[in-house]
Length: 187
Image 1: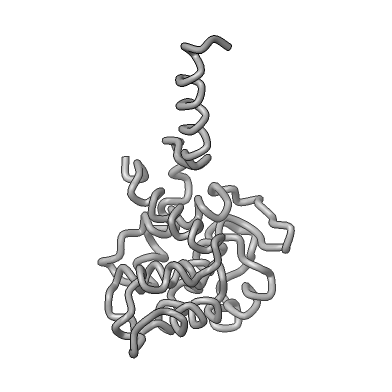
Image 2: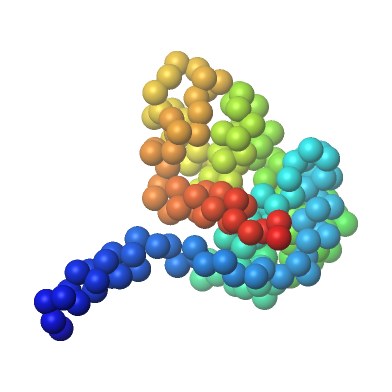
């Protein structure tokens, strides 16, 4: 490699390293949009932007209804069979974990349960981000981060206060959802 090419090479390598793999402008399927719309409205009301949950589905499985993790989580929303069983007790009409409609419904229902547990958090955005963090790291993981974050009361804490106390994987997960939501999902 010549001396003149070396700086260009370094710039290209640094860009490749610093750009997340998921930063591309993929065209995501709209096949499941009706389910995301319906269950977002059902569990979060008409004012929530359903694209948040589609972004979560992309982060979980790239909207692959046949996805299965090494831990046994299944479907678009990557739900464990045991978690689906618990959700199904309250929603017996959720027929099958592997059916995209019910997988999406169960995932958004579970998000709603986490969201309800975070009533002390005043900011909608902080509460939603902590909901996604809880989906990934478990509600207990969010509670631990809330305890470590500075501030006397939970109600005074914002996402930025809690973020650094969450596991790296969880921080990346929420960051990815935000990126996807703010990208071209609405196009």
